[in-house]
Amino acid sequence: MNQFNNVSVVSKANVYFDGKCVSHSLTLADGSKKSVGVILPSTLTFNTGAPEIMETVAGSCRVKLAGESEWKAYGAGQSFCVPGNSSFEIEVAGEPYHYVCHFA
Image 1: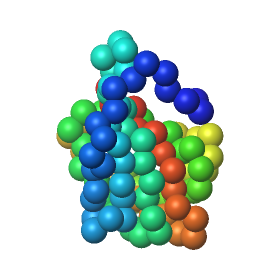
Image 2 (image 1 turned 90 degrees about the vertical axis):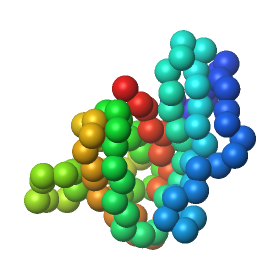
Image 3 (image 1 turned 180 degrees about the vertical axis):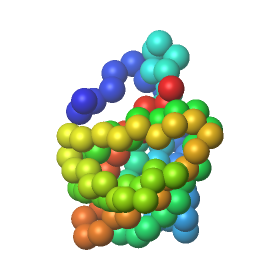
Image 4 (image 1 turned 135 degrees about the vertical axis):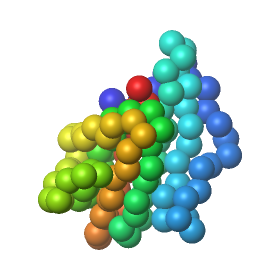
C-alpha cells in the first residue's frame, strides 16, 4: 500500500535506539493502528506487546524471531509476522529500511 487515507497521525515521532529507528503512529478510520518508519543501518532488538506484521516498503533487512536460530532476509514487498509478547532482532545494512508495522 502506497498511501493511507482518512487517518489520524501523531505528529511527534517515536525515536528509538538513539535515532536509529524513527516512526510515526497512525490510527485508521476503522480504529486499527499502524506505524510507519525507517530503521537506519544497525542491529536492533524489539519487544512486542500485541502481534505485529512488519511490511517492507523499501530497503531490506534480516530478521531473527525469538526462539529461532536462523536469520531470514526480507526485501521490498515482503513482510514478516511477530507474535505478541515476544521479540525479534533486525539487522539493516546499507540502505535504510522503510516499513509499515500493522498491529493486531
